[in-house]
Image 1 (cartoon, rainbow, N blue to C red):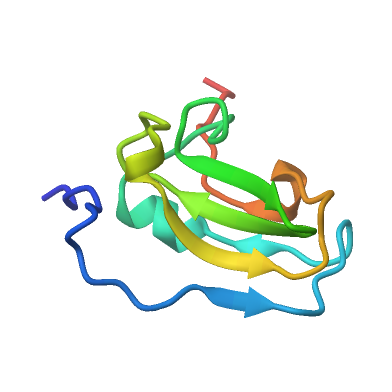
Image 2: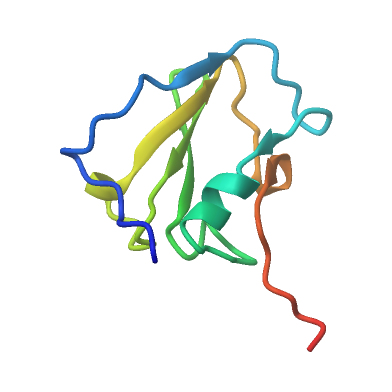
Length: 100
């Protein structure tokens, strides 16, 4: 049975603040989160499931379960304190099998 999309009325814990993230060295593992929602994507940012929002010298990692990319659908999962250059290469997520 599919997991319903997150909504603004869904209670959620506060996001995590990561103070020692090193771009190119560390990774954020979102594999299980994407798998729980049945999401496989070669481009989760382009498809509207993930947003890396740089603000105030930090990067917010934001997830939208419905893939619309609408601002209301995103939930902040974590903030990378002092990081402004994070990219999809720093995120672990399920990707479709393109070998078929």
